[in-house]
Amino acid sequence: MSTPYFLVHSVEMNDGVALVDGRLGEVEIAIGHVFSRSFPHETAWRQKESGLPCALVVRGIEAYQLQLGELSPGMTARLSMDGSHLSALKSAAVIE
Image (tube, rainbow, N blue to C red; front, side):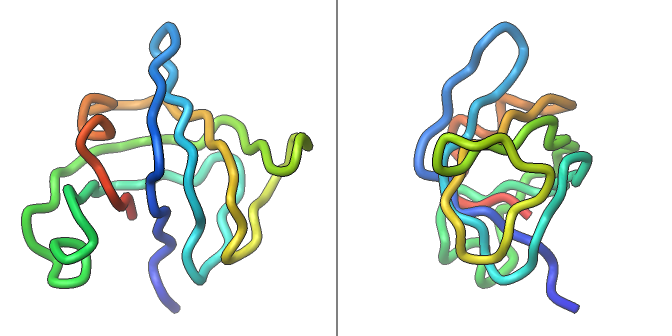
């Protein structure tokens, strides 16, 4: 099974919570999912180089003005995330 990934469009920090807008890849995720690496651009992600370790926990999913418990592949959404190394999101293009 593939590793879930999220293509990051924008990041906003709000009191220790990252609000991350983007699009989910080919594997669904649910609240509680932990992303463990961030990449500065898609090429680095595809080649699995320049990845930074992180532990970003999905605390909320909002898509199409609905709060969801899980997100299906290919959907765009806003993820509310916390955890360690939130600063890695500032320059991230892809998290997995």
